[in-house]
Image 1 (cartoon, rainbow, N blue to C red):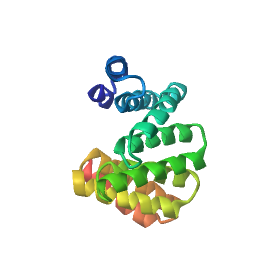
Image 2 (cartoon, rainbow, N blue to C red):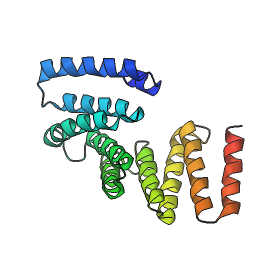
Image 3 (cartoon, rainbow, N blue to C red):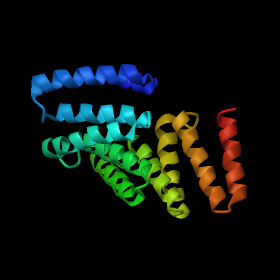
Image 4 (cartoon, rainbow, N blue to C red):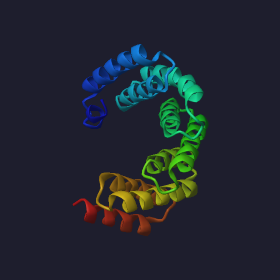
Length: 193
C-alpha cells in the first residue's frame, strides 16, 4: 500500500491497506499496534485525496489503539499525531493542529534524534501552521531547520529539499525580505531548472 500511496495510486493503496488491515485484525485482534498503524496508513491515503471525514474516522480509531499499545515516544504515534494535525489544519482548527504537529515533532526527536528525516515533514507542517497564523518568524526558523535536514540526508536536489526552499522563499516574501526571497528562488531554479 505504501508504494501505491507514494505513486498517488490511491485506489490501489486503499485496497492493499484494507486487505492488510483485515488480515491483521484476524491474526492479532482489533486492538493490536499493527492494526493501529494500518489505520493511520489508511488515514494518510484519504488525507492525500482530501477526504477528511474518512481520514478522521481512521485516525480516531487508531489513536486509542496506538496510545495503549506503544510507548509514548514510538514513531508510529508521531505519524498518527501528524495525520491528525493535517486533518485539523484542513478543518481550520489551527491551534489544535499546531499542538498535534508539535507533539509529533517531540516524538520523532525523542525516538530518532534531532536530524532524522522524519522530523523534516513535521517541521514543514508546523511551519505551515505558523504561516497560516501569520507567525512568519517562527515559520522561517522551522523551515530553515527542515531545509538543513533535507539537504543533509537527501541532498539539495531532492524534491523535499526544493519544496522546503520554495516554502522558505514564500515566508521571506511575507516578511518583506524580497531580496533574500529572490536569492532563494534563484537557488530553486538552479536546482530544478
